[in-house]
Image 1 (cartoon, helix red, strand yellow):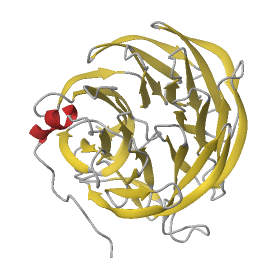
Image 2 (cartoon, helix red, strand yellow):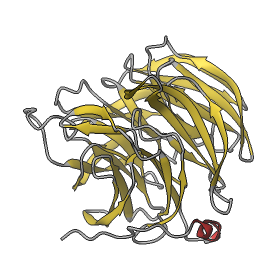
Image 3 (cartoon, rainbow, N blue to C red):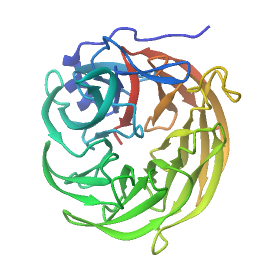
Image 4 (cartoon, rainbow, N blue to C red):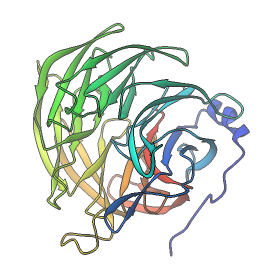
Length: 385
């Protein structure tokens, strides 16, 4: 029998206390109330729950919900790194790639919203809403906490924001290819001197140079798989790993390893992981990577390769090579994953079940611990590192 936990939400006023605790690790799930799926067909939910975020503590076992902030634009469209959290967990950034079409409630249109949330407020609260570009999706904050990048998937650009404390200021855009290049996610190297950008529209991965608050396109690109998408950097600064969405025809898709020490960086390994790796999540030490594989759960039941469960797949990282460790069954149309600092706990968000699914990990196997129920589908997620 599955064990459920924390159906209710603890009072948000507990958040500042938990943030100050040495063992606390803040994670945020951005939840999309608009998007649904009906036997493999994407739909817009009518009379949907408002988009919102769930704040939970990964430092507790099982993880514990400690707050919510309503009316934060979120979107399942785009990679699950649509949330970024400051190192000190003082604030978070959430992007919203799509919104309900004001002219037709059964359609969605690209959105450009970037929401800043003060996590130290009592309770946590939205303090600013800014604009990036159409299809604003993957977002990252540099290690120094002075810059943020937002990928604009429907514009072919990356927005640059200067960061001072918890204040963001727009500082221009970088154009990558054309409007159809599909920049999906950007991630900084640990030294903050470079950023990698996946482009699912033209199947390339760009390398950006970062010098202080000046970000430029080096024009060097890599090619790994079909529709590069979710991306994570190793905290060691030696590799990056990105997943590829593939063609959506039920075939197995791949993830790629990038050698960041090569000049210029290049793809050095490619591994088949199953149909549609939605998210990749590097463990805090850089020892493991978790991959959330849709496994055709987002297809119609009559689809020849439909499966009734997604897969949480764990790989060990040995230098620039990956080796499979273990798998766990997850729900349908699952998105992001986050690791606890001790690497003994992993949480996955699933859109259809509207839950956060928790697993323990002992280095060899996964054990399902329970679920946190959500009011809308979990679409994007990051954890404090």
